[in-house]
Image (cartoon, rainbow, N blue to C red; front, top):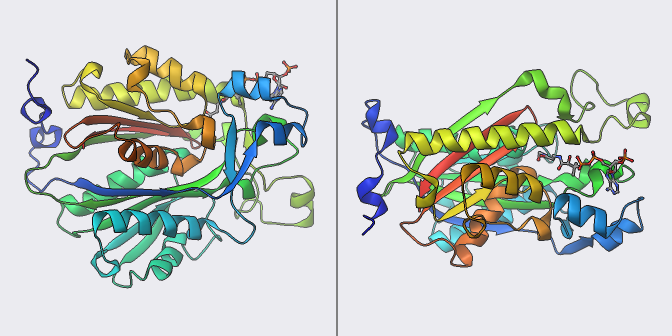
Length: 345
Ligand code: UT7
């Protein structure tokens, strides 16, 4: 008989002398905008086909936010859903971390706008930027505040309005991305393992593979920068693909190794939803069975920092994940950045 997960999982942090409390995800929530943009719609916008998009990416449709619906609005909606499910009041929240590459504006932080919208006036608030890896980076940061007893309740959100930075004339990228948000409440629960480990990595040598060149201090907005289309996302797809497979595989293996787990013990693998072929390649290298791997890419496309957050909420809501199950998250994005996390649900 296989012993329950709680009997076999070592707390990897304990090995290194960690004496603090553990951190659990006590509730999750997500939100996607109503408007659906299908592959057929894209066929009318650029030189592409449903057949190409489906076979090369696995994406069938994506959600697009309304003109007056911004990242902070979507983030707040996901947060309120997580709070409702967890029975968390706005006053309980000590810290809000928003992971995004599409903040409402360069400053103030989108997290501050979310604080105002959900009425969490006690909370400190800041954004982090680790592109599509942002949700795991934010989880790990939030976890540190819980484990160190600095805060009791941390709200972590991944939210994106990528439709605002996609070049809708570039078929190489515009078919890939969508809008949405996902949120998680972090708290300490006695006797619950929660987040067992998270590893993060980055390689700034490959920053040019995926970037938005305009809008920062290096290239502020000018008439020239706008006409050169520098305020849109750019990607070298093939190189990004190869790096994504290698980095997510390596991060996932490292996370499993730290917890002394093999992939067969994982109930649900939740990869960053960028491309079905990337998901399959990483899954195969890890030895995961297709039924272990959660995919919603076909419905939402790549939602960057919101991607695994939305998938996690859907996996919980659909009953794919039950309390006590072991789950593996893995992410990859611009930076380059990557990460993986093992969670006992
Ligand atoms: O979230 C951050 C991480 N992001 C990723 O990990 C994305 C990684 N990259 C990818 O998913 C894939 O590289 C893409 C889906 C972006 C592209 O797939 P690919 O198989 O690498 O295609 P490609 O870029 O090598 O292009 C193959 C052909 C080209 O035509 P030629 O030069 O062979 O004649 C492209 O022009 O497909 C063409 N193409 C398209 N055709 C129809 C590129 N985009 C399209 C399109 N519709 N939308």
